[in-house]
Length: 263
Ligand code: IPE
Ligand code: IPE
Ligand code: MG
Image 1: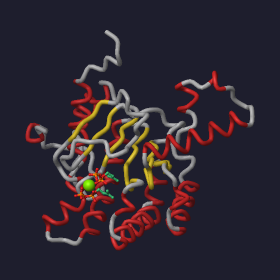
Image 2 (image 1 turned 180 degrees about the vertical axis):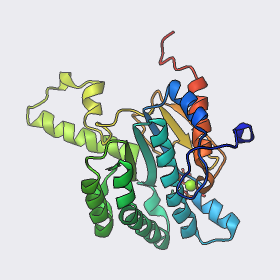
Image 3 (image 1 turned 180 degrees about the horizontal axis):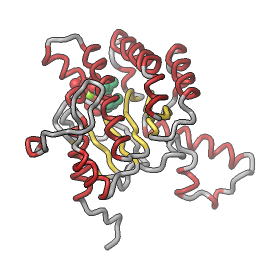
Image 4 (image 1 turned 90 degrees about the horizontal axis):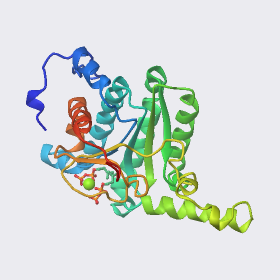
């Protein structure tokens, strides 16, 4: 990304004191098409840690810090929903030690960020099969959801124990039950009806998906919802992805023509 071309005078600072946008730049981006829903595959934490000579969990910890800055930047731009892929249904295959440290980071993030989220109008939500998460994470999640439930600036949706295929299976299971009980007839099953059974039913489909860390694949993320999303793959590992990169991604999104099968 041509970050070197970005102006160096920034008007809005992030939590770590770094300048995010000049007000002029923010205004010009806001006048363009701002994606309502941005979804992010936050990849590259371990490779980043390895390069810094740090343990893996530090990569995940820095990743959690990076997320907060991006939420702030997205709010400034007027993005309504930011979905962050935090833990996939496949990530249980990692070592018990790594899974444990990830769960601990999720719990801490939810507890330590709760008041800031409330103050900044961030409504915390989750997708994925959270019934399999450790009790302490579920409890922290429920509490943060409750505390931030009336926030209106942005929805931060954490994808935890999330898999696109698993989500579709769970949705179809519920739908099959409704058909069995006679509340829905098979001929009534449409794309929009099925969408209503998905975890994302209240957020709509993402307009833009960004994957950091250089890999070019979806890794079971929002399989149904990304049929027409704009996809961006960036080389920076997630802990190095800053609001400036986010801003550049939105600028590139505004340059793309979205045909959705027409024109
Ligand atoms: C993403 O970073 C975080 C999770 C999948 C939980 P990784 O842990 O996949 O880091 P890399 O891709 O191996 O560097
Ligand atoms: C995707 O990253 C999952 C998350 C970012 C939470 P992975 O590192 O698990 O994906 P693969 O293994 O490269 O496909
Ligand atoms: Mg990875």
